[in-house]
Image 1: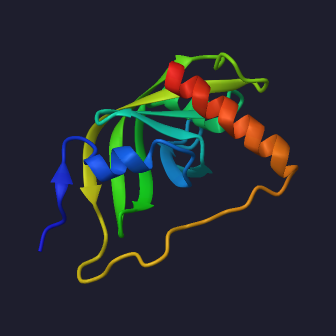
Image 2 (image 1 turned 30 degrees about the vertical axis):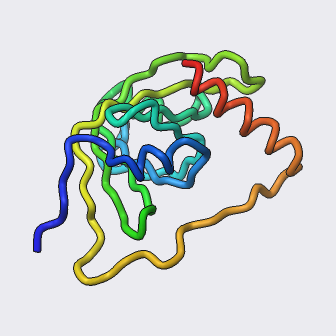
Length: 151
């Protein structure tokens, strides 16, 4: 049985991506030309065809996207695993309204593919804890998410 493929995010995924979320992002490494995978959490679905994420502007991800704008975001949600492919661009070199030097990256979605192996479902989604000052982390997370929503 073939995996389901959509040209844009389905509604449950748009809803899930309205708040901070653990995802992985695959880019093409600007030095080696090979794959590069990073874990990120400041992710926001602007709409069913566009995802924003915020990342340190010095991140290797930024150089990778400037060299090759093809990306794949992996999302575990909705009892499945999704491969979201698209083209990325730097929307803002410095995300306004946050104290850190974060870049805002926009992904224009080309394809959303349910890649969960046949006959199974996710029963527990990834969770994480911030390991630094929890109050400071909560304030920063709120600032970043609000800034992405305004962008």
